[in-house]
Length: 123
Image (cartoon, rainbow, N blue to C red):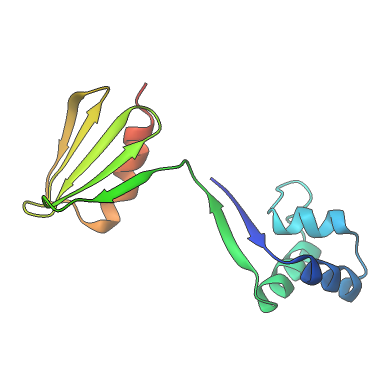
């Protein structure tokens, strides 16, 4: 899962001037680059970026989620998988390419990420 800190051009220029660094270093730090962006300087850049109103963004696969009137929340994953969560019984059915492949019982919100990860691994 990739993440980055979203900042404006004005904030990027401020950070460059305040810390005497290049735009490339700001880029590495705000993109959490593991080779060049995990230093004391990078941590200072990220703190300054957040202090100036930066927003941490996470890149995830696009997932369409619908809350239907029939009491179900349905998530359509990019690998032809459908997660169908029942608000009535708390269960989740996983359909892959139109076939039911798994059922989860008593699902709570904290379970959803693991269910999604399992479902996204289906081929």
